[in-house]
Structures are given as structure tokens and as C-alpha cells.
Length: 85
Image (cartoon, rainbow, N blue to C red; front, side):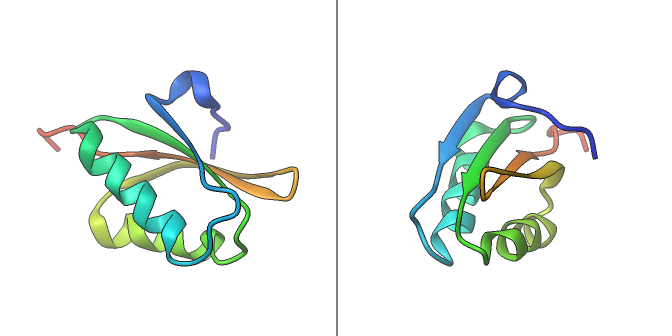
């Protein structure tokens, strides 16, 4: 997956320090609040976020644009599909 950063995202969420299931729930809320086509970059240091966030995206129909490890945390760029998808 390509690596994207905050410049490519509409919103950045620093969720470090939060534990399961909060990172996935806050990411979901941001994607829903942002509307169709929104991109959200999430940074989370909870080990379960590596599983929970992609799983939430799969369940909700969101796209995982990129995932990477940086400084002991997960950085994920997530996208809500456009309305016409």
C-alpha cells in the first residue's frame, strides 16, 4: 500500500494512549462525520489497533488506503468511499 501522510488526509487523529476499542470507534466517528470521500489519518499505539481499525473498516465499508509502523505506533490513512460508489 502507498504511504500517505497528514497532507493527504482531511483530518488527523492522534489516538495514542487510548486502548481498545476506542481508536477504532474514534476513527469510525471521524469517517462518518467527514462525509463521503473524506480521508482520515489515524495514529494509535494500542497493539490491538493494528487489528481493530482494519477490521472496523472492512465491516463498515471504508477503505484502508495505507498502514505503516512509525515510532512504535500504527499510522493509517482511511477513506470513506464517495457517495456514488
